[in-house]
Image 1 (cartoon, helix red, strand yellow):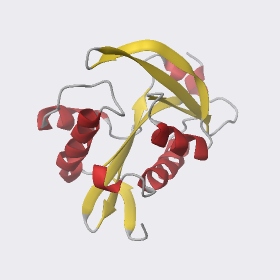
Image 2 (cartoon, rainbow, N blue to C red):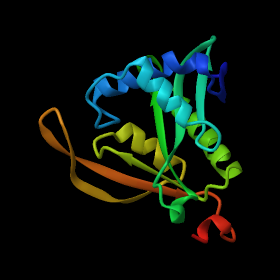
Image 3 (tube, rainbow, N blue to C red):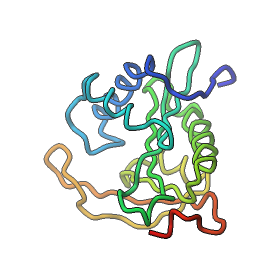
Length: 175
């Protein structure tokens, strides 16, 4: 989509981010969450994603149509260079390349913020998501069998990763 822009998310975007996230919860293709979130939840989440743990949005005709974030992988300092990622696209814009441009920009930001690796968790049946990740160089690591419960049934979760910024380890690895 030639008129789509990517930018850092701002507080005014939180309601739209919430709407798109709740679509992901309803559609059961991207998260084990089952309960819709409210604005208080998303405002708190957004505040926790400032500075190093960035949130970006894709905007089309002044409307946020997707978002992506870098999330903490672990609280242990040995993993400080590893980020987990989230990416959600409005239903009406899925399959149009929005995920690809969000993910490419998120990787650039991750490098700028000294992450050397991005990991993600996806459902094995989410072929569209995995197609995107494979296209951009993510590799399959493995599958957590029966990792969660969704709609009364066990669900496996696939782990994927990409090394993005390998260089001499920084002091953050000296825990």
